Image 1: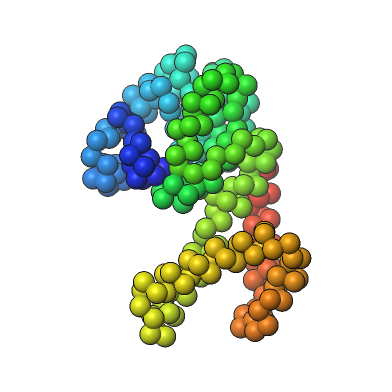
Image 2: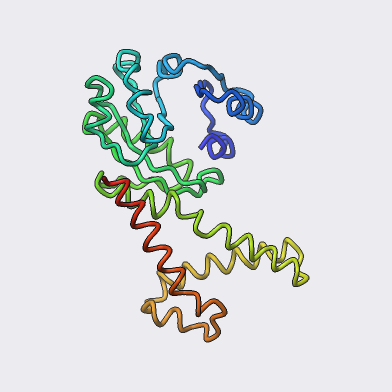
Length: 241
């Protein structure tokens, strides 16, 4: 997210980051010299806009001590799945000015897909102002809260299902004699075109997949789909549990 704002020239003038990992703070400040790094969550939480970039298991123990620290007119943005607005409000001693957001890695190049949920306690004018700030990173649809975990599986984690395969294609392209530039251009065009064919051609899934008669991985498709079903359904159920 910092990379996306920085790329667009929209990095806020004052940023305070708190993290228990000193090496992570060092690397972050090396990349973004204007930010301040601290080992005090309360100091970082005394800002106008507070991002809670935490895994669900540590959310309660980290947020509870901040209940009396947040400004009354601050907004807290949780980047975590699983924990709904009502539970976050309880953790924060009744604080209601909360947003939930599902960050997507392509935000670093301003091409993210970052669904958000706004607490009713945030007025429309502030909501519009915050959306203008967040959409610098990419698309930012306002979604029903019960859909957030589905998007966590689909969009937040989605690139991880594809990237290792695409990098493998780059390696193969090099071994086949293509230059890195030609391979990158071809693979990028293929990925964008494949998505456009799925969603803009008007064809059924079977018709789309029948457009290419040779399927080198065809005999492995069932095993791959079974992995998707077992791994991702299990993770979704865990997030919703």
